[in-house]
Image 1 (cartoon, rainbow, N blue to C red):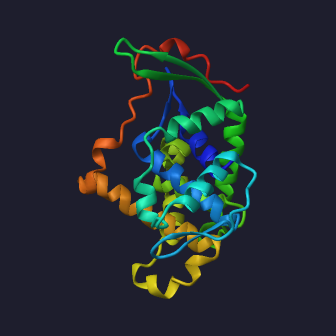
Image 2 (image 1 turned 135 degrees about the vertical axis):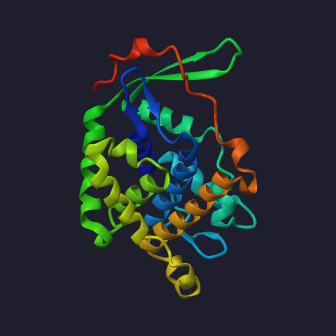
Length: 256
């Protein structure tokens, strides 16, 4: 699984009547950011203060990440991190849902409503796989600011926080302490705005700096559409998830 696959799996929160994707308005941007983080850890790209640079065009194992790498290499002039995130396609969450379906992590029923709009009912989630992912998340948030991005767990944790998925990962009263730990961890790994120039060289190497840069830009982007800035608000709801009439699927939330 890529970090994006894992992020979506954590966003799928089984409820009493249906399984829904939490924080959908923010999720697609975090998925886009996760692809950059994965490519950065693989040594294929570097995120500088002005642009995303392809350092190594050799293929990685995941086909989607290869496509992203090719697209980055073919974009002229090279995009900035801000521009790349703001060009996130509306379909990205749906594409990642299909990936989870291919990996047998979810089962999905697709249909069209009377207006002809495509809809999706998520019938089941592989709960054992999701619990194993949560165990990894637990380990990193309990490590605190000393956590390392070497295995991608810190990247996943800060993206969960940035995308507003803390309550999906750690719901209810029982999750309060873990939600606080997650928030503290993400805060500890945000960039100090005054240090941008000093970090410019470091931002071209190292997953730790890349993760912080991505988180910082995501935070700014989310702030924009909560305050109505930069025209983001009109493009947040994909309208592809069913909101009613799915109670009959309530028994399908178990594992495979």
